[in-house]
Length: 351
Ligand code: AKB
Image (cartoon, rainbow, N blue to C red):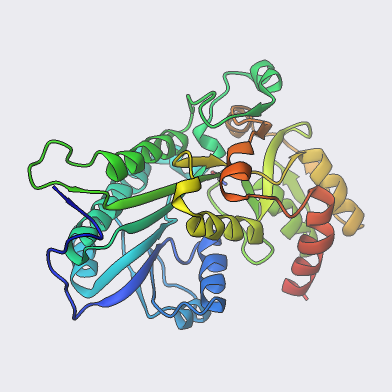
């Protein structure tokens, strides 16, 4: 048995050092790549199933339009780069996944296994541990009905983990896969290399970005409401006004994953952390939208089936482990998110 960082198999000196980002063109990918670029990172390699924006492409050493389930992509990456860090953001979100659950499983689980295996092989090949960051979601939780949701209050990481969506099941399983690859991968093999992966995961709440309009998620009603108001379009919210889940702004989500990546490993007591900035009902969000966009036309037309999904997600999460272990601290409550981020950002976007 050998340890990553203490022994090398093949130095692979002709390959370029790289930080790999899957789902690079998605909502979190946009913010993450921009932040890494501002921090002076020149070794970014972005992958997305769709063409990545020109501006983001300029921030990357290389980009690929490719499917993370494609094994030839993985082989290509293996031969071209020395990957020391992976941000695995690609996933099919909760609403979209319910229309094609098996395809979602292929992408969310099959794609994640491909990336975990690539990371483990990379560590064997260049002899350094690979840091693997993956966002999970409040969707990994599942509460059986509204009464249990109300009674549960702020849910801890290991509570209520019986998700009702394919996406939630996939995320919960991938959290476990990450822990397995980091601690037990090929545990009976004679040539096993220990300690190849440093797997770190955070469960995002609903995210609100002023730059991108989300698609395929079930927490999308909040950002959709805001973007519609800024564009002067009417919006019919697909959940009840009293629907409550945790949220955060996109810059906070990006800062959080970077902060977790930078944390001293010795301070981390777990692989998976809850985080949240504020818990808000759809009505509280709509009221603020109306306050800042006085002409906003927001109605509530709950979709019974999507409502069941959001009702199974916690109203709030307990993120005390993240606060204690790596200094997670939300920047905003609901009002300051609007005042300092949403309103100025969205006005600029649609100006
Ligand atoms: C979704 O709605 O599927 C995502 C999530 C809560 O992870 N935004």
